[in-house]
Image 1: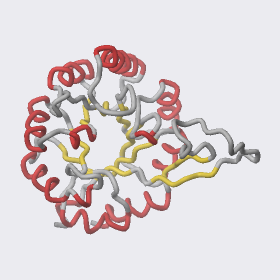
Image 2: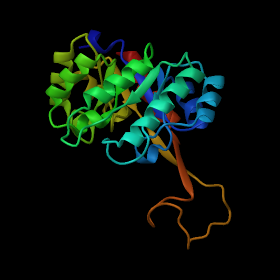
Image 3: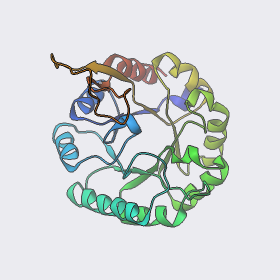
Image 4: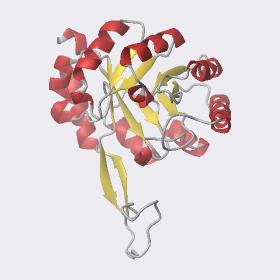
Length: 255
């Protein structure tokens, strides 16, 4: 098993310049750049992309997701996705690629729309994000991805955390062979990474490894919340945990 995980790469998802700098310094091999990771990630702003590209020399995949919620989009939302893709590609032609996913109401990958995005993105790569885990059948969805020609699939094996989806991940990797990359993600951390990789021979893994950073605001009004509900955290935000990412990278380097 050691040879099978010796080249495992680490992708870290970030949604800020500070987060990108931390991930890069901790040894990330690639960044997934999003806006607002609290809802799973949205399309980031041009300004955010520019400032990270100006400071970090790592491959970057850009999230292409117009809103929070499900992955079944209206014609207007799909038009926004295409416009964002073209604007970002024109502004940053040396990016590594895009991360996206679109489903039909029946829970299948939307082949036609994904095909359109892949054509627009070319020659940049496409990673199918965890919309894959929301489809009806992992093997059927894998076959669609192979037909589409996506470069990788981010998946937790149809579970909330990848450590609970090991059997599905093993089967996906077996079937995909060298045709595309199965990149496990969700819930992976330094404490479970070694045992996970001993079971799942992944070429790449995906982590967020975030920790809460308390606000420096000395005055905090407890009677107001800016989010959709009272549980929203208005006096804290999240950044990658440099110790966690460094430890995970050390495990990858040792194998």
